[in-house]
Amino acid sequence: MTLADPAPVNKSLPEWNLADLYPSVDSPALRADFERAARESGAFAAEYRGKLAGLAADPRASEKLGEAVARYESLQDLFGRIMSFASLLHAGNVTDPARAKFFADARDKIVDASTQLLFFQLELNRIDDAVLDRAAQTAPLARWRPWLEDIRKEKPYELDDKLEELFHEKSVTGASSWNRLFDETIASLRFSVGGKELAIEPVLNLMQDPNEAVRREAAEAIGKTLTANLRTFALITNTLAKDKEISDRWRGFKDVADSRHLSNRVEGEVVAALVSAVEAAHPRLSHRYYKLKAKWFGKEALDYWDRNAPLPMAPARNFSWEEAHKVVLEAYDGFAPRMAQIAGDFFDKRWIDAPVRIGKAPGAFSHPTVPSAHPYVLLNFQGKPRDVMTLAHELGHGVHQVLAARQGALMAPTPLTLAETASVFGEMLTFRKLLESAAEKNERRAMLASKVEDMLNTVVRQMAFYSFERKVHTERRNGELTAEKICELWMSVQSSSLGPSIRLGPGYESFWAYIPHFIHSPFYVYAYAFGDCLVNSLYGVYQKAHEGFAERYFQLLEAGGSRPYNELLAPFGLDARDPSFWNIGLEMIEGLIAELEAMEES
Image 1 (cartoon, rainbow, N blue to C red):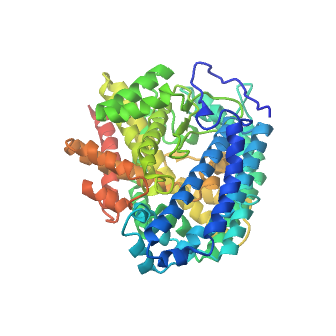
Image 2 (image 1 turned 90 degrees about the vertical axis):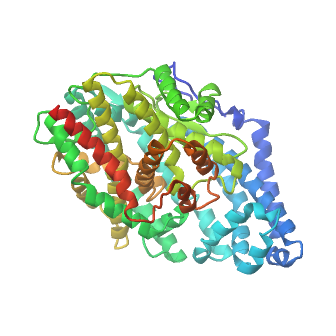
């Protein structure tokens, strides 16, 4: 199979080496693993389907069930390795038909194999609680006790075996295919700016250009191209929202976000408290800051293309890859050498893909792959200060994923309640490192303003995204939404969250269409605000008492998904279930805005 591999915009940036997963799509190792996945999943089903209740009643239940869970976990690692390779290869160039075909074919084979294992969790959850609990008291099953307790939470929403198989198999032609259509559509769009036809990432980057004319042209190009494609994006959004509604209805979820709360292992009332706290803080956070920024620009209100513009008095700065590398690792090392050592592997062992390339997936992510391998980071690095923060963010995820891998394939994945902890903490460490080196007032002001904007984007903007999704999914239950209606819902939450000092002009109403989280992970977005506020509180604990903090912090990261978030936060004296908890994080943002206002008076 021939895979297209377009040249990166900047050839000096690192590209990842996926050979640690498989040497190539044609490698004997990959072919053998496809065959093993099919063979061993069939053998597993033949040996255990319909027999778990009997094993649980056996005097050697812990040993027999432990052996079954170990084999199941090994298969999950195998499936994950294959699909990690396929998805990372595809992300490198989502417009290449050969990669798209390979990804789709791999997904089909793994869905076929994994369908044979669906019975396992369902049958485990049908074993009497007391019987399973007794078996899990001793080794070897005791190792997976946290996982067994975790999957028990899904028991009320599980269907019978055949229905679960149908849902699982239909995902290939359902949600997964619509996700792929979105990715390929976004990657293929071109935006006309300055006589050039640009992909989404470079044109979004121009929204931070020092020249307002460039920012405006980029913003209008985004609006024009997205508007021309709104029918496609509206169809994708409507279809996925309806697909989710059908699944939620069959499973018995009442609220549109309940399934996400369950997967995050967080109570709906905790998220509701976060929403209320952030919305109540709009006047003293986003509204207040953008009024101050408009004053810096000599305007009564900023146009939407100025929202993330560099300050007019800010010294222009671009970072080379080497500078970004050095800054982030020094910041991590200042907190704990162990953290810098783990992050250093991403650079030294080619676990990062940094250049902007035609067809490459937009945005950034850290893919955990599987515990038997290691994570990979994707960036679209263009040297902006925010790109340095993005590098710090994704490496934080990477460090977390490396540390949690020891929990194994079933317990390493971290619920979204804590998934953003290390990433946002890594950003904060890097920001503080850069701030320490800022000698002049204007440079310090620019850095503080940039951090405030990042926090507003993470907290206020992401919670507005969450409110938008709630409106879309709620309205969709009453019938299909027109593109115009979706735009109207988008504008309603944007205007209230950003405030009167941001003018949302024509074209901005279509900006919802390029946000991938709405498509790939409905209601994921509140995890960013959750993580930011949580980390602000964690960082406050760190500032007050360094001694012993790093050890407790690493224990939190190493736990992965093996313990609930409230248990992991308890050693730091934090409780996210307390409504006042969220104000701790919001007050840190408010304090930075107050510091900026004080600089105006000095």
